[in-house]
Length: 411
Image (cartoon, rainbow, N blue to C red):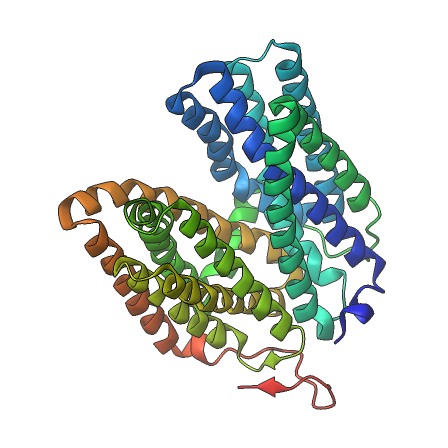
């Protein structure tokens, strides 16, 4: 299915536009907040506290976000959260620009912003499948993911330039504007109402979501696997990778590695615009397996070009998983439960990352940096192979197979 045909669906275009704009602003804000805190205190500890103040409410409220997104019109949830986030960022920008900012204020506003953002992931994930026909769902996921990656790259580059030229306050102001523009985009979504939750008991609704989650073997097995995989990736690549780069091929080389990873994801996305896999979750887990050798190459400290090539291949593999996972969730979980199930998925991912980051240092001190990275890579490989061996994961098929489709359908 062509992108041109996909863009005829106005509600999808509105959702795509809103997410792209808000993610661009968020990427700018990540730089602006960091330098605003450092300008105030010069303390990495203070910066960590401000960042944690935003992250913790995301963990606390993401399950509630799933319930609310299944109970209310999801596009309106996105409108409200965007307005709240926009107002908090506007207030933060005003405080920084007027010289009245403090770590306490920035942490408090960040906490409100984080609580608001906890509703965005389940609402977006549940809304997307209702904006396009079933046979265009893969293309819709690919385009949204590619647009999100582009937005983050543009936001980081633009945010860095804006903060350098005019100061952190203007970076926060740009994020505030992006949220308000996004709210306008989300308000344009027009879809048929889905079945609403009848219960007013949040605990009952969470239990129903949990029942849907644990009753699908392929789902809880992959989420459990990624609890381990995300921890290993956070430790071996995101935390210890820069250390290896600093000690060997340099920070500029590390930038090339991250850029290659993104470029590989883009290439994979372009392929997935045309190629459909009969078993997308199985192919996606193979993609995770393809990513893991990157850390083995990184640990061996070869020429940077070899790490760049490995990163390119690995990025392509991870994109296969991202699209395959979204498609499997959207096709095999009932629409009225989708946001809650995505919330349980998101919670597992969020909880795993700080665990890996916390363990990276002790593991490196005990085993050595390179050895710890190799261990992380081996664990990812083993967990991926075990997951692939589970019949429910390996055999799960897409539900929109059409023999008359023009795109090739592969095993």
